[in-house]
Length: 225
Image (cartoon, rainbow, N blue to C red; front, top):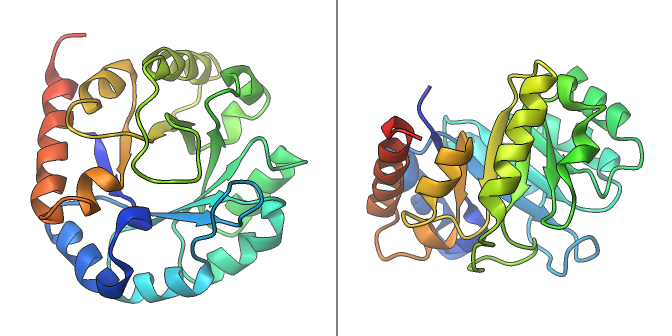
């Protein structure tokens, strides 16, 4: 399967959000990434279930919801009910991670676990076989437009090796500072989903930026490693 592109609405113009997400979907976006922040787990406040419900009405691709919130168990049902397709929680925020992942899957969603830059991939050892997705943060979460952490490809490789040892086919998603210049390194390291906010919605032509990122990812996917 080719690398999937997941434009993040974090950097979108919310006054024209519908037009923006429709444009990137037409340009070939595979998922729409929704960053949910509570102002406590990360120093920012963004959106909630009502925005996901609105997006579900206007796009046909899966909604990839990333919960950057404390006690994420409280909101699994709410996001399942409004149309999330993938729900990712942070290992650092879930007290009983296995229970949280099981709850997500019981609701019929794909379950992901995200790791902050300073969190080692070893925390996935006991949960790897239950996951559909691992999200590697390649910036510290909270704000869009940050600079990609250069050591991130090493962590992506380590995560892929851990998942492979566990017999897990979970895809690795990367989020933070992803653009056509950083995409080749993360794809070569094993990333299967690229989240991009500022590189897409911060451009004057989000549709063209989506196509450009896909082209860079596809070139990296077919290049010898």
